[in-house]
Image (cartoon, rainbow, N blue to C red; front, side, top):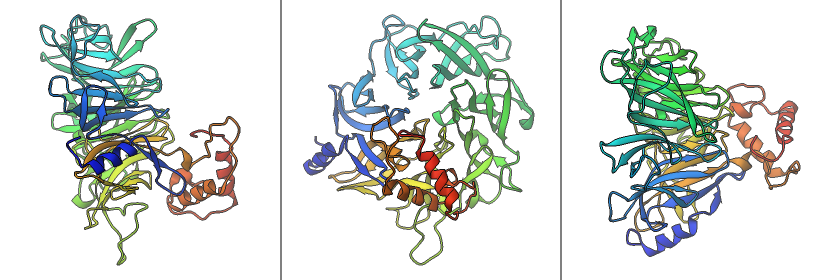
Length: 492
């Protein structure tokens, strides 16, 4: 393969697609793609970029390759097969090919909402697509009642799709009713795939007054981590008023402020700041999650909240991580390496986040967590293949809406050089004994051990009395476990 030793190549070739146990309750991890792997006829993978996974475990990953034609070396790999490729021809507009990919998403039916920059069009063009079907093209006149008549679309930024085939997109328009020639808006495009038709709903736009920030919206943050849409069409997003920012929720009937610079946070006496760099997510149960920054003590400034209640804060001890050998506790120092730090909430209310703590041995000092449980830790090894690092920047990990699957970008060892890779964590067997049958599963010791381990970690979602400290196990808790188990085989 050229970029790694033969022994390392053999290990990773053997590893791809196989799964290892990660915990006592059977959580597994699978290597999906790795640097140096040949995918189709395009070339060998050089880097892992954006990624997504849905409730069924179907996944999609954007990769770069060593293809010598640099204008055709990127591709989307879905479930191990080349799905889309840079410079691939599209049915519309005539003659257009894919210039580059922007958003990466995948709904429960396997559909995606894309923002493609296009090539081979005059003038240069851009389009919003449902899979490979053109929905909106640069220059299209909007029919949304939220815009003035004859408002054209000028550009599209990040996009997100829900299971109802509604696509949330940050758009640039030229609304005659708004001063300036460039206006920004958050638009929901409701696409009817069967009829090939769509409608548009303006959720928020430039100029709308935000009383908490003393002015009108001037811009929207455009990153995957700054916008999300639920199956009922509600959206959350980050918007700016000059140099100040806030997190908002909208559904076409109204807009609500969830958090804004200078506003009260869940921590008494500390207000929000720098919300223009906030990261958000929204689940189908209506829960929202935010990674933001507080005024005051820098060492405890970063915080993750769900529904305006603290989940974890910089300076806390990393949950589920053994303390220092000499006593005391490690302290969390960061929730990611980029401006927009990935954070997601499942429909079960579980929060996926990345944590870095102050262990001087940097071989062990980061992990991915779901609530208070580490699900993948730096330094962890699968046979002869260790995890050397876990990516924590934009687009570096994602969770399926039901919370069962987590896909992540990592660096693996085991060869002559470290290898970039995408891995899939399947958490299903940590809750039920899924043997593929339609009958209720048979209770076994491993299942209850898993419950005890989860319970002992103090996880609120496993704690029947809803306390936030490690609870005392009693007969009511076992009844809670049995009721959950009796729901049947599958992800509850």
